[in-house]
Length: 308
Image 1 (cartoon, helix red, strand yellow):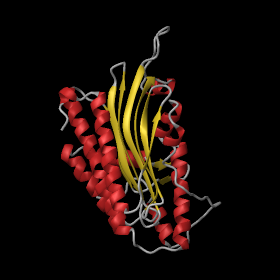
Image 2 (image 1 turned 180 degrees about the horizontal axis):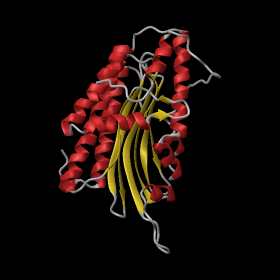
Image 3 (image 1 turned 45 degrees about the horizontal axis):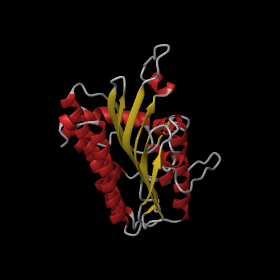
């Protein structure tokens, strides 16, 4: 574990870079044929990152695993969100943000979409905090899979605090929600933000929790890759997959904070939008057949489902 004496923003960034390396290696091994292409980039306002994308693998149709460490002058939107007022005549405070963000879109509609983000934010005002989350978006909701996923997250949370899962699970339900559809994006997971350390020891504890969330990503998703990769599907299931991808796009472009932050701070557009699926579809006023698996999936895309 990183000691509290060495827990600087540079140390945190280096740990996130290592996490990106290990996750990419695990995904390539599980996919069997796909390999990540790395794209190093620099942000004009300060900092940069490594965007890694995998396309047309055996299991993963399109996936992105991004690392970034950017810094610069805080935007007005960021200052408003933090209730920070810059005195007249003074330059706005600066920020430093680093993290890993992942979205994977599979070929087979029976393999779920998954997203994870872990991040650290620091400001010259002295504000600093951790955030992140992991959520699962199955094209078809399978109760056993959802329970296994949530139990895996609860086990990690309980290792650090028994209060975490009961707090972060509803937070995910509220965050990964598409208000204009009145649907959750998937079966949820956990979401947390503005976890502010009270002292150096607490900062080390919070970072240990964030690292555990990052480290559980590969075991969780490679489990679904191997379990579901051979499940049969046809044209009906592929069409439904494209519709569910459309919902994913709607959330990311309209509601996702990370997308907005990246665009507002003049981040690299290609890296910000690498979470988009390779294909998606929208049908006017589409209604699933009564009693179908599609209708059952929509019934379960709601807040407050007690999976564990």
